[in-house]
Every structure is written in structure tokens, then in C-alpha cells.
Image (tube, rainbow, N blue to C red; front, top):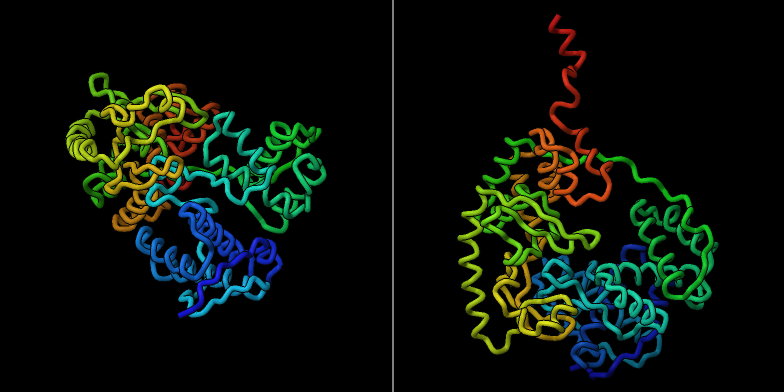
Length: 451
């Protein structure tokens, strides 16, 4: 038996950054160790060999990782304990059973089954271990009602900026430091233009909204331009082949997404009250840009949806009888005004998870919606089984909806409204993949052999 000494290793992130590990391994270790530390804080236990074993047992039991994923998690924990001992923490590692190479999981606390927005709740940003600047940024974003996914993204960019540029605090931010950081991302890390743009937006927000620092013309910083991409669109024959490889709930989800042109986040977050069978429409609430819109509800999908809701109601009735189960997640403002709305049938998820999980905000046991990751995996597997050689994702169903609507003569402004696009130029992208791009356009090769 090993001695159960506690480890105190507050400089682990700094030591990891200075280590000889590769960039990907460093990031993997950083993410997994933060996950472990968050788990310890949430359960009120110290960092020790015993808590590490309990954490790995919980992670294996709740997340059902593949063997290589579990091995990566274990190696990150081993690095934390072994390096902590080498740094003079006094830890005795003993027979800690941890093995090989890390894996990327979230940098923030992972609730039992509620993983990011995939289950209806984006992960909570734990307060433990945050600097005063980070807490101030977090408070500002929550006051403005920004999503938890944005919180995680912005805090991550700010944290990396401070570390890379050796900035003392937010009030010391300068335009030149921000530009150097963006150059570092583009030239040294080779990040995509979208990531570079996100980092710029995050740092400009933090400087102006949180620390009242004027960065001057930093908003005019020349970013790497994103190339124009032609969306992946499936033909009707390919869609039929795809749907033939799917079944039950996932098939119904795919049909609804294609029929209504939904983003995957909008699909999984549908609630019972959003379905209007009498008017044949679905109300999308708080979509991208926090905007509501109305999309069509297919007559072909309606019978399947009604049958599906009968099964959902069975889960709902069972949940109502459980005293340990709270209602579904609701936005904070609504939850304060209507405390019992979470147990109302109208607010239940259309696609509920088969398992209940812990709400990271309140610690209450809830039933969240299904993982969009599981749905997307089903789409990819069905496409392979159908022999479709295109790169098919769930978003391809949204692209196909838009293109087929235009091909069928729907006005482009109407399609823009149905998709929730802010700019008409975004919708016009689908004009490039229509089957008949311009009346009477023929390939010169066809003309050559026709003559």
C-alpha cells in the first residue's frame, strides 16, 4: 500500500509549459489535469493517489472511453503526480496505476452526462483556480448574458494571451501585444482564420468591456482570410440512401433537420412547445445571434414525431414520480420567474437523453437532451454504409435543404429567413451548387460531342 500523501503542485501549468513535451501532448495534459482538479474541487477531496484512482474509476464508468483514450487520460494524471514529486511536493506516488499519453477533454468541469451544449447544458466554468482578472471577465460575460461556450472560449484565449505575452494583468493589455499574439497564432501555431478571428474578438471584448482599455485601431488588424468553401450538398438519391441506413430516433432527427434546415444545436435543443402541428411549423428559439425564427414542419415527419412524443411522455411521467430528479434545464431568468416550469410538459426536450445526469450549475439531477456528438457519429456512419463519397456531416443536411429549396423555385429571401442568415451573401453561396446554375449552361465537352 502506498502512503496517502496529498500533492500541492500549484505551478503545474507553468512547469508543463516549460517541459520538453510536444504541443499536442502539453495541451492534452493541461486539459486532463484541469479536469481532474475540477473533479476534486467539486467532490471536496484533495489531490492524492486515492482521489486519482477514484477519478479514473468515475471517468471510465461514466464516459465509457475507448482503451486508447483511457490510457491517455491516465498518462496525464501520472505526469501530474510524478512531476509534482520531482518538484518537491512531498508526494509519494507508490503504486499509482496510471499509464500512457493524454487525450483532449474539456478544460472545464465535466458534469456526469451533461457534456457541453450536447446535453442541453454547456459546461459550467468552475470558479476554483481562476485569477482575479478571469473572475472579472467571467462576471462581465454573465452580466451580458453570453453563452457558457463563449465564456470558455474567451477565457481560454485571454489565458493563452497572458501566458504567451507575459502580460501582468488585463489593464496592461496593449494593441502591440495583441497583434504579436495574433501573429504567433497565425505563424507559429498555424491556426485557422476563424480561430484567429475568434481570438481577436475575445481580446478586444476583454480589453474594452472588462478593463476599459482602448486598443486603438486593433479592429482593423489584417487577419488571415478564410477561403470560400462550397458547401457539401447531397442529391435526393443520396439522401434516400443515407436515410435507408438509419433507423428509429436518429432517422427521425435527420429527417427533421433536412426538412426544416436546422443547425444541429437547434435540432437537439427543441422543446415540446416549439412544435406546432396544427400550423405545420417549428419555432426556433434563441438561435444563432440569439434570434427566434419559424421554419416548416414537414407533413411526412409529423406522424413519426407524434409517435416519438408518446415515448418521450413515458419518460416524462416516470421522471415526475422521482423525488430526486429536478425538472429540465431552463434559462436562469425563466427559472427564477417560473420555478416549476422545468417540470412542465411543454418545456421538456423533444430528444431527451436516456440517462439522467448532474447539472453542473446547481448540482441537481436532471434529464438533458441527447448528445449531438452521438447523432453526428450516426450520420457519418450511415454515409459510409450508403457508399456516399462526399464528406457528410449533419450540417450537410442543412446545406441540402437550402439548395433544394432554391432549386424548387423558392425565393432566396425566403430561404435566407428560413436559415436565419443575417446577410443575403451567405445564402447566395447555395446558388453555386444548384443543379442548374444559370439557364441553358452546358459543358463545352457536351457541346463538342453533340455537334
